[in-house]
Image (cartoon, rainbow over all chains, first blue to last red; front, side):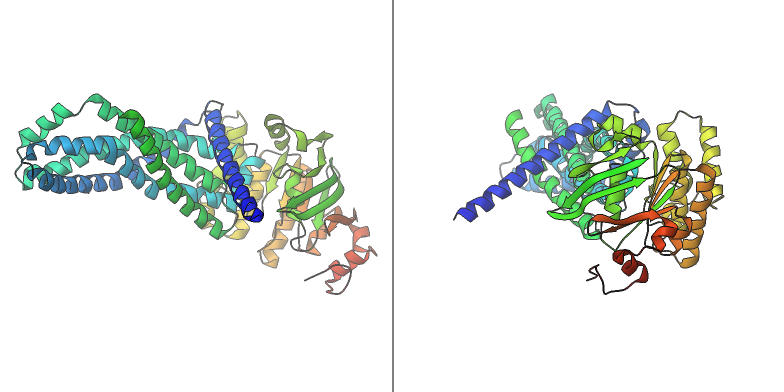
Length: 256
Length: 248
């Protein structure tokens, strides 16, 4: 019995210590943002890898998400003779929830996993040690620019996801199922307020932080082996998905 | 001069270094030998505080680097160049950019001067004209040479070599040793080599130290070390499985 309690206590302490290390890592990354040298070129490079390189997958998933919402929304609303609300239903769902969450999932899968694997392989091949030995702080060089790039890229990708999603639903609802174009946009205009847009973008900003923070941390602390890199990549993706959903709930409950 | 005093290090409760004491003379090349997994690389990584000890100290020119803050430690690390076992070139950069990297990061030299110095170092290690390639596109020997060029470009006072010839064929290994000897003659740095390449590595070593059972079992000038009567040294140099060293 006592050994069971001791095991549970030990596991809890290890988890708490791990969380503490993660927060210290994040604080260090932010602290290094403000210390010279400024790494604008690296930030721009990572905006390309996180943002621009994720565009195609975000647009594709945004269009099809919108199309599915157009179909499902139309058949649900038709039962109540409320097809004219399709535009507002799609826009509110996308702007407040689906846009930030799904685009964050896409970026996690597309870029976050690659980030964890890249930094993890740098750990295995002693490139991180090489940076330390050249008196270059690897957190400043590898992590801080990625976090800033994630904070900039994620809201932009979410905005793009929202727009293409709305047009995806438009294609199905208006183009295929005969909802009037005027009522689609008029419903949207009357029901969507600035807070809806703002809350979605705020969520996406926090998701950008979660993705870059978790993936960099897991890669940075990968065990020095090939399986270590694989484990770090898997753990980073799973943890990102869970944290995104949990944090989404908390933000939604606060902002509603 | 580097002095290692009573250095202890354990990983997950398993002691690797159990009180290492060692002096590394300025301007000389000291080679650390020992069985696989005995802690040579661990010891090497303590010399520029890539690892911190559980107990003991590492004095670099009189300063205990195990107790320095980040900024002071970075200043000490500027004295060091490191050639890692796998060269540890940044694979997102070309060979040239890897060599120029420490200068771009740590000096205010104009780009033209940085390019000149990087090209000089690449030429010195026999990689002239190869700078445009990425690390993944060159052989292991070329990576080691590029790593050496990167270590040399800031003209450090101390260079640490972690198994510089491991994984290379005998000819390439010999050429790397020749290169180390040549650049040592040119720059006069303090060199610390961790190597299994016996007896080849002795040709470029001023001193040899042997790590066994977590401590320095023997150390001295190369000619004396080779003739040492220490049973651990004899067993290791003669490659015998029977003796004071446990092999398996």
